[in-house]
Amino acid sequence: MAEKIKKREEISEEYKWNVKDLCASDEEWNKLFDSAMREIKKLAEFKGKLESENNTGKFGEVLLDCLKAKDKAGRLTETAYVYANLRLNENSANSVYQAMSGKADNLVTVYFSACSFIEPEILSASEEIIINALESVSELKIYQHYIEDILRSKEHILPAEQEEILARTNEMAQAPDNIFGMLNNADLKFDDIKDEKGNIVPLTHGKYISYLESADRNVRKQAFESCYKAYFKQKNTLAAIYNASVKKDVFFSKIRKYNSSLEASLFSTNIPVEVYKNLIAAVNKFLPLMHRYIDIRKKKLNLDELHMYDLYTPIVKEANTKMPYEKAKEIIVKALEPMGKEYVEELKNGLEGGWIDIYENEGKRSGAYAWGAYGCHPYVSLNYDGTINSMFTLVHEMGHAMHSHYTWSNQPYVYGDYTIFVAEVASTVNEALLMEYLLKTTTDKNARAYLINYFLEQFRGTLFRQTMFAEFELITHELSEKGETLTFDSLCKIYRELNIKYFGDGIVIDEEIDREWSRIPHFYNAFYVYQYATGYSAAISLSRKILNENGAENYIKFLKGGSSEYSIDLLKTAGVDMSVSKPIEDAMEVFKGLLDKIE
Ligand SMILES: [Zn+2]
Image (cartoon, rainbow, N blue to C red; front, side, top):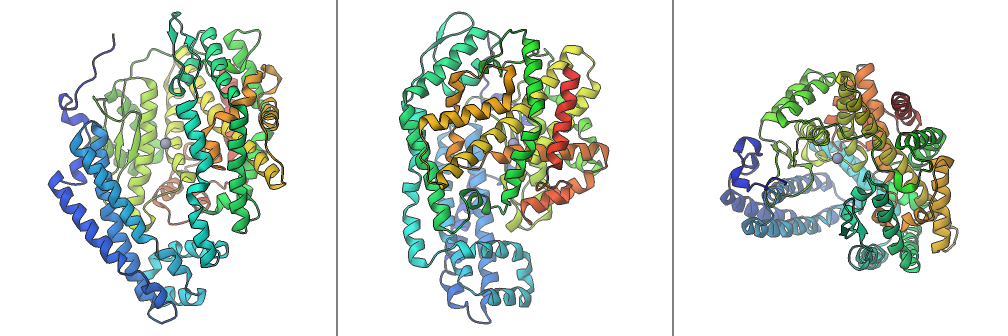
């Protein structure tokens, strides 16, 4: 029997985070809320001023005051929002914090709507006036990258009247995503399946992957077939929704004068189109390694035929190693030693200093995350369960937390965040260093095999699978840009060919897998998933540099960078250039090494 989940009060304080470091009490929060509102009002008073001064010598000073007001209001809003939600996440049933979080949501909306005039009014000024302002008002220098980033979009902004019409299409443009969400989450029904014990059990989105991981092949097969049967029943609807979504992307990219929908999507973070195409080309070059992995999998699972539903089940039994939290902490500190003394000291502070909420309690938010607000230390929420996996989760989330910690200690508020493109680098580098340490120190054969399998699966799921997704998105958008309509059959054909290419002929490409495209929610946020693959290869490549080339120093510089430069440039500081294929080659080299080991 599973142990009963504890109530939050039953857990000793030493295992909980210290939210009071962020805001001393609920009473203090009310004061914080009020002062945030006051500062937002002050910010709103700048509306119209930038535009009315956009031709005068006073523009620079007004802009500086406005941006300072924005930061002040932003910091207070962020602190209030994070406190309310950390509290709510401790126990989502707590009605005091439900109400507080509702108020905080509203505060954020008010803040963002108060900010909405800033970018258009900055863009109303001529480049000359802005350059002049940056030169004459010295304090404005801090904001230079921020301002230049706004100016970058100038050529894609339309005349005011057209912009207004476009703004009104926003909700309609969300339709494909919303409709897919409704169909996928509410209306789609899966047939029940029989579990390992022969019980009839429902198939749900949440359970799907765990059934595919089952050691019982019949369970995997049923889950796979039941899943795709449900999507097949809606085939024309699903194709129509996806076609509409791609058309929407193409429409907006053309209206805003981009060369392609890919370019439009990558523009916001200033990622060159080559980075995307280079990823696909480089991974394609290494597909024989994936085919080799498939052969190994078939052999280890002892199957005559490997099917698509045999991809997720571990090829090694889980090592029954118990990993108590205290021991995990010790291991992590040792594993991250190559990062250098300073990192390790800061990490230890974090592990002991009220950052982490370790154990599950009744009502606590599931999963794990790192979060926080500028000006305080970061927070990490876990549901630590004493497995090797939860040790990896701890080191992963501490990677995010240390990234925030370094950024917040070294950047002004305006650059205190970082993009998705770089976010998973910090967490994955930590995981890779831990993996390396464990492989070096583990002698038990099965435990080692388990670790290698875990690592191989990360490569398959993150580097290969997400790149295949990225390639699919590129093909579908390019077809749509040529005026072709995407139908169920044509989408399945594209997807099947990709599967054949990526997995090779060592596996049976079941007909069901042709429909996988129709169940991926991320496809409604086009050109997003490639960042998992680029981030992963950057991280693996950096972990090698840290271990073998004393690369820690440059890596720490990257952690300190926040969003003070574009993501590509920040990664160059760290030591990887994502516009060439080297980082992907480095990562593949590691993958190859793992294949050699497991064989
Ligand atoms: Zn993460």
